[in-house]
Length: 124
Image (cartoon, rainbow, N blue to C red; front, side, top):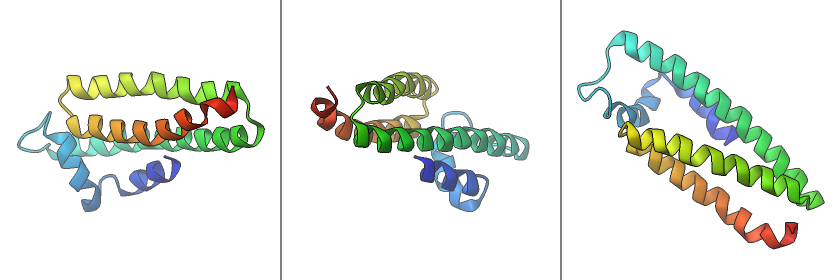
């Protein structure tokens, strides 16, 4: 997530990002956003992706340390952060009909849940 967030921060507002941006825009601006809105989106998405980068790095550090030390509290910290993030982010996405983000969240949750589920016994 840290790498993905960093890449997204760097490409937001560029033609490369517009491939994904159009999927997000459909729920709010079927004809496409105007220039001022695009500027706001660039800022808002950039800040959001920066937070995602920080969270991803924190998770990576926790995961690296957790696997080395087998600390149950770290496993639960990671699980709790996912359990809080997913319904809040995905629920808002569905509420606003931004289904591309809900799908992305679901894919990310599955990718992260597989190792968490598989390692539960090693941490408890």
